[in-house]
Length: 175
Figure 1: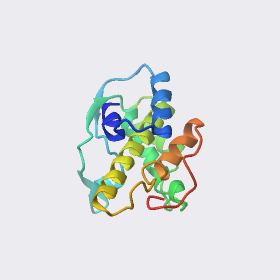
Figure 2: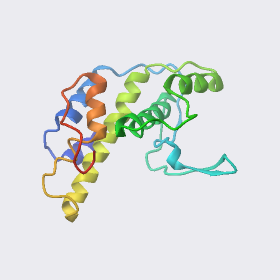
Figure 3: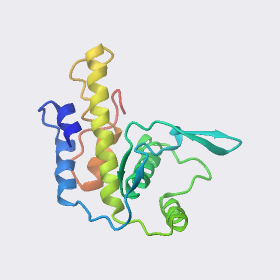
Figure 4: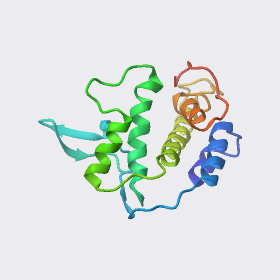
């Protein structure tokens, strides 16, 4: 939450603030072991050779916590890069339920409270999108007060996940 306070600079952010309050009200009690979380679990951060992963990239958000953190981040970004952008998922890519079942089979444990962790993933990405918009505006790559940090694919998805008002219509520099 400190990162969000730093990024928001005291500016009200209805979607980010509303989701933070929702997250605080719904913190689950972890049932599994604490594990190393990659923090940015998505296919674009994997390097492959001969269709097998050989490297895991982009570790600046690594932390310790429940396995659900990374699984939910992966699931959120699967939706972000398909449904969020209005394009179909890649052919042969496992759907949400299939991916969850595959993880549970391999890990030998049931995933708990995925909604909380998916909302957390969407909230984190929304804060990151706000920071990116601020940087682009400061550099002159976006016009001042563009609204890109408040209304983008991540914030609209986040609002929809927990019943907050949509921050706006699709469009603009960040979707």
